[in-house]
Length: 249
Image 1 (cartoon, one colour):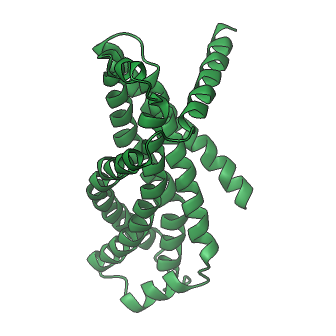
Image 2 (cartoon, one colour):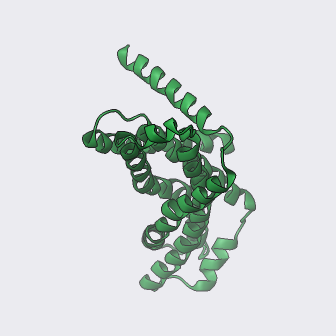
Image 3 (cartoon, rainbow, N blue to C red):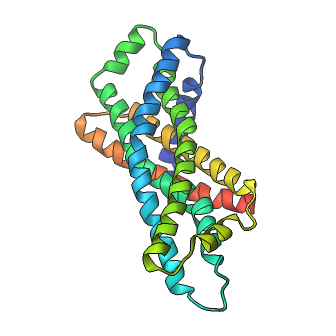
């Protein structure tokens, strides 16, 4: 019962904080500069890890398909077809989101949490700044804008990695692989992936901002709230992954 009350209280606090964060910025130029800064911190700095993980996972997926579906009964294009489905529908929008949750959620929560415990947020409020809008909304918009770009990049690199994995085993030709990638492709698959990554971007940014903004205590609590931000973001991402999958299928 106590846990239920704590959840309801925290959820209400989260909704009210997001409501304040969505208020009109007081200075549009400063707000725009902060969005660009957050895109660099949360988006551009995540490109390398997305590239590395995508190419190796893409290669591993195709290698597993080749080793487990090696049969004259299967057409040669099936490896590219299954690879595209796996990367576009699940890996890039969902697994990459979990990786970004680990990287970005902890960064956002610790950054805002440190500003809270060092009373920087209190100082801004004394000066009449809407700190929720100033600190939180640029991070949310940066994630919503840049995470879909990372997902598209991940899909492209993972599919290249898939061909390299097949090439490594010496069992897959470029023609057959590309034939499978193109087979029955429609833009609905890409839109599905982008919708999932946008929802995940909102989940990651809002939960981590909430955890950092409402922190009470000192440096120990900053670490605890950063961990909670990652764990809670990951759990909610998986819940919404099931809901979106059910909704679109």
